[in-house]
Amino acid sequence: MPTKVTIVNNGAIRIEGDIILQDSEGNTYGLGGRGVISLCRCGLAENKPFCDGAHGRGGFNSLCKARDLPPPKPKL
Ligand code: FES
Image (cartoon, rainbow, N blue to C red):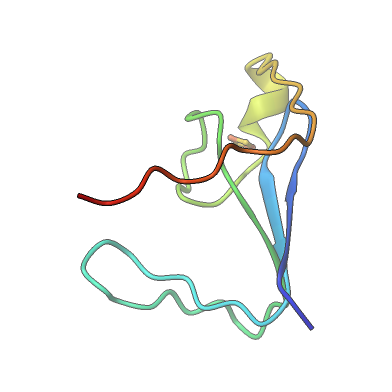
């Protein structure tokens, strides 16, 4: 079962599945057994990288429709 990532309109990035979340140093966040987490994409959360609902209070506005990306550029 693939991990599902949902870009929530005016809100977080919701991730469902078998999640391993690491910081930039490779340390793993303890998720307390959660199979669903929401990551902040508005920049307003006090508990980054997790969403804490601040996007609603801050009036974050971002509607993202699914689309196809172009193929990646060849590596030189
Ligand atoms: S997306 Fe929810 S607090 Fe930033």
